Image (cartoon, rainbow, N blue to C red; front, side, top):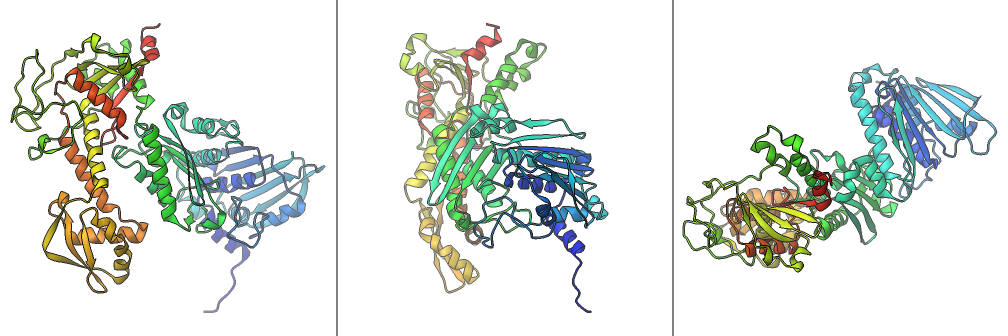
Length: 625
């Protein structure tokens, strides 16, 4: 079989298969070209989900007839020199326009700023027509019709018009977030118009346009730097979360990316604060020297590679966790909105207890385990009394209230009474009212603490709140001292490839602090001598292999710590104040004060909110005042 050179049309069609996967891919490439041309206004129009028509108009620098002829040829670009380590533009390959022109009907109309006339060039199925004069404003209009008409097999792999139109909308939103100083307009016969006015340097205003006005009161600003990498942006409080990862945005030197390492680091930063199956909301910008990041690893430029991924991952986790410690303990404003809806008279008509609970979010799960006793945990908030009855998990009823029978263990609870246990109003002090969580007024349904603040009221789930306090105390203990370990009678020998042993051994001293002691046993084996006592019986071979895999992929060995923290979370859940437990005023206030002093107390170990805040203005609005 003889070797022959492919035609230019086939080469372009192959390139189109890598660069132009769907109409949204073409829109992304054309918008990037407009931004690189210095446009301050970009208008996108679509029809048929972008398959029938995709038009991108901008007011950028424009092109002359000679540039138009070169623009539709492969590997012709004005954006880079021969140095691929110094890429400062969004596009640089010179493949987008010829790739689109090889599978669609492409026309480009453009006029240089200051020029007297513009020109138009057309490319249909790879056939180039020469530039001709055209009446056009300064800037460029790129029109793509009948996408993939030259490769009809590709049309079979496209989704419905609505799905393709939605993908294009998502591309425009990402570009708008990356460039808040640019005005974007997205319209067409297949959609409602989306207009995003320029917001200048106000990134939060642009984010509010994309994610909704509720993001602003639930956002925490991030501004951190480590070595040569700067991280800025906004992260949502943990209780402000979504059902998918589509509300996590990351930009590297202005380029929207969907890199798995970045997404994984953001989720890791929210670990133990966001419920399982829920995702945080975050918009982050990374700024670093172009030489420290490789954007030339994927034809669509969606993935990037950092020279030091460990540094970037550590920066993300550290910056977000610091921000959450600083301002993430407040309740999400969406919780108060749901609570207001539940209180509205028209919503309550004809409803039973189910409707009255709707505004408080889902009830927290209470799992029982008779093998774990609260007395075993040394972590209790100050102000709580000691247990006096062997069958009671916590204190008996306060003086003046009738004792109610309880069964031993945690799974059998008596039905809580519906009355509120009042607090002596004279006991309230101005100092307590000025605290973020205020002063306790009453306990409702023997599960919720109602506290008064200077600006409204707060409702606290006592079990969820104390669960978080106990868990944070346990986590602090994990970090402050070497954990107890159990010595294996016979060391467990784990066979591993020599290179995996080499990757794992640098973490030996770090893992020893967590109770896992191992050493090299020849060139291709690890000898496990001690395992964490907290885990009980553990498969040492599986644990070592998991840590070796993690060290190879992420250059970390945090899997063991995650296991220990998961055990601590379970212990905290069973060792905290239970639902149905009556509290005295001093106990309730002690719980509120410790919540204020504990990072992460705004949500329980499962990521659900521990309290909901209702402003006085919201309460007055309920009564039409």
